[in-house]
Length: 190
Image (tube, rainbow, N blue to C red; front, top):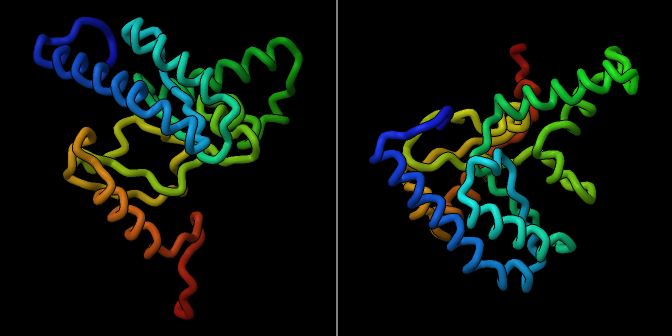
């Protein structure tokens, strides 16, 4: 939610979600360490409660050398703002004569996105599967650049209730897809 003061009922929902995120991180940190999971947080941290900022920072530091799985949580993240800040960084590099405009390509642009942190150690910052909870049939300003070729899975289940059964359902749906990354289906009629 952009811009300032929220109505009380929305603020209560945000407060609940912030507490839920903080509890999730604290409750799962030992498992992240045991399973080799690296936790990264993307988004505007300045908008998060101080306790959530500290919990996120501490968990990222504790898991920074883990490499078996990368878990990226987008909290107070805006795909549009991510694109804008990437453009600003590239413009600053051009202005400082560190980069020529004609050298800017998709790869350089992607390197400036917040999700480039997920590209450490040769993993991809573009999700194979994007799961959208809560019955919403939109991306809601989420990973707009990175989801160009992602498979989408929509569920009516609310995020706090999304568990192993729903996750397995999403994975089964993903496994049944024919991923073409923008290419057309092979069709003799074309």
